[in-house]
Length: 444
Ligand code: PLZ
Image (cartoon, rainbow, N blue to C red):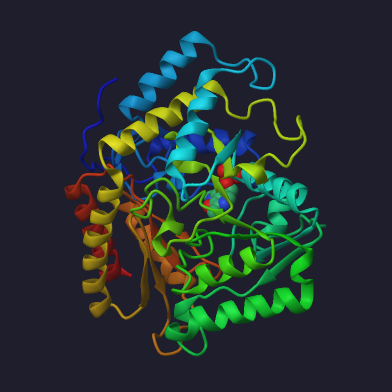
């Protein structure tokens, strides 16, 4: 494996001719429902760089949507997964088990918040983990209702579509959705009517009141929340909100589930984002960053809750695939060795400093938020009205792409530009990416 030079290089139009050729073949055979943010076809990727088939090298501020935190070809991930590939690719853990699965569960017990006894079950995707957290919570409580939040995202399967807030593109035309799902307000500080300083207390009171009056706390199996909401716009619930909801869950025998699929594994500068306010979830769902790009997901939680399910009630052919488990062990090893929590906090410092300077010049930046290497800016037509400006977010992303900086958008209103660089990105590349963003503002 040759390391990819950590330098941006734009040698063709973006996308270049080879990418365009592949895109034409793709259009002929790949279902139109599957989109791509930027149709440059990848040749290799690593560190903070994605190299395309035309030889362009893009600065990566996306990490494949918060997945390749250790980079897309991390030495320990490649080494361990390759060794595992050579030994065996699959037996199915439900048929004849193997050590890697157990080692991942041991690591999850060690790294996730709380010093209680913990157990885990492994799956393939984030949505599958969330579905299984609901199965476990229903089995443990004997209750059915599931409470989720405004702007929440939990996946694209039938149950997780119901849990996801946003219609387009995730739910439109795909109903009917699973029943017994209830949505309540979240403390979105920037858009809270009485001001960010009141959002934590008021939103939690409203949410608790709605759950109590409309659902009945004694009917609720699980409350599921992303400690930093991802697809919904990198919304950090205002301080006090998460602890109040977790406390309400505890008082009422409701399983409190932290969906850390996007925010987990060093992304926010802590192993898990719920540590920020000392919240200890009953169950935690993880995926994405866990395995350096290999498909793996987990539900981890209190041993007595996880063990409520009858033997054979949880599983799936590929859940905890041995190659993916080896990748996870390599990824976790890298996070510890390189202290990627510290790296994420440094990325936050650099990004927020630069973005604050840009905000002085460009008032379209209504809000700068997020933690660690999960940072976003919310774009508005006018900072006084806060009217969302999705067109600006789209135009800025496009301008960045043309210069070889991969950025993603998100948000219920589509007006949030989000930055999710690999945590191993060099500081020079990080700053160069921010230079490109600044030039994009000047041009748009
Ligand atoms: N929970 C918090 O962020 C996945 C979705 C991209 P899967 N987020 C990226 C897209 O448009 O499909 C996600 C998440 C949170 C659950 C999921 C679902 O994880 O691995 O995509 O199923």
